[in-house]
Image 1 (cartoon, rainbow, N blue to C red):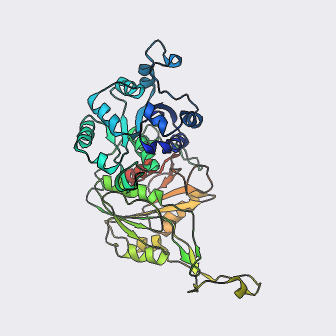
Image 2 (image 1 turned 90 degrees about the vertical axis):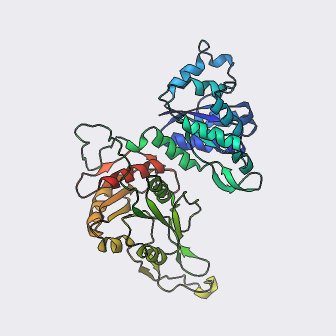
Length: 422
């Protein structure tokens, strides 16, 4: 997909080389158009290096003219135009149609069917100004996708709304805006063929989860060895949080049970924080009457049998090393599956190194689940700690369907589409 990334004069512009990188990792081609003030916060040369394309800033640059219609050709090249960060000044330009920068001439020249995605970023008081909110409302009325800023600590030192949305969220929304949520399935490693018509699945009306109680687990668990050490894993919770945000946007009543992660709670989602596998199991049991369970957490399989209250000191081992006795943790997916009622849907995740489809299919049966989302460990730019994933969806009634690498937000949309069809 071809993306024009517009960058404007906000301090959040320093994050844009990473945004360009994440978009490219998701399989897109990115061209950058900057306003002159954006260059005060991020070097054009850095953006040229990561995008592998010249950065456009001067609308009268002789090297880009193409007969004076460069802005028309560039706008028609793009599948989507993204402005991130978008300053208050550029919001006003967009709302009034002012064309006094290279970026604005490109935006004004885009075909009607080309989406425009805008991620504002500014200080709280600026964001809350009535004029800014009027401009945002006007853009929404014009069909522009607005990614609201997050709340948190700002460059000014204040705390409040105005921080640029998480980069992974921006990538996911860009993907879903242009239809990546309905990507064409790829053949699986088991040579399962594509559907006979080989067409892109059609969008659902996304009403299948409206009003339903959805429980999602996310992140790792930490199993205490002593007061300062624990058995942990590399899960960041990004996939589960993306599922929670997407389900809430579909009208679901979402409870997100999260292990120790540093992620902001999606808007409108009830969050329950836990640390250990036992705590996560207890939290899930308290919601056992929910309609849908999506068990996306990376729960530890084992926990120390005898955690120590203090700190284990090296000298206490007398040079003989340390032996830990581990016992299995409760299988949360299996306990939910065993209690499943006729109206309930249970979805599990499976991370495997080899025989991914075989192991996931077996898990579907042994856990009494309705769907397993499988992914392969060790795949570059996929899984823990990155913004993208490569998933295979397995259900009892359909052949396994493998999807190409997508942002985790796009994966969330694909997963929820499949849940709605169960």
